[in-house]
Length: 295
Image (cartoon, rainbow, N blue to C red):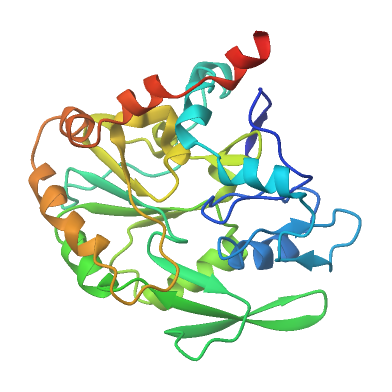
């Protein structure tokens, strides 16, 4: 399914500049191949993409003046969520589901995992401490993607795969993400399904993940993502996690395991997630930009 587009008031940006910890970037003007490369480079720095030249990119934030850069740094995902329209306003009423029904042997509860800055960090810049690399070809040139894995990733994936139906749902394009996942899970033993940007809902520069498109009972769906706005349409299903880039002492995945284990077998995961993370209160406390503009 193609991404669905809608516009509504959000914080101002400088062209196509995006924040370092925001997983999503508006790359619609670029070819799929080039977009994939830029997606692999996201998060580490501010990116400014020249829409007039597919080969030009700056990662030093130079396209934004200090005031605009400061405003970008103050991006609040909960303000963004507060201004979201109802899901029924942005997706077709009879939108088909993406995935086949669960088999009898499949765990009842589904764990949806984001990819970049949740499980791994990718870059085009050569780094000696990368865990693996893979090539991407675009514009008649070969490029190497360097990938670091979040600490304890292997142990985390092995554990959750034994308890949940694991689905990767990433806003990255498949030309990049598919190759990365083939390295992480070459035998397709861990991830039962892979869902990419084409299945996201595009809302003002962000690719949001409508969990209902997966065709699973939302009372038994959990999503872990470093960008809370990504699951803004199903807030009570979402577990936010700190963005990861290269900290070797990070233990977020390990720390998350006990809570995930507590969700196995419960009839409805949403009250447990809502109580623990209190995201609705954060949204309620956020200042609506749409309301500010009406004042």
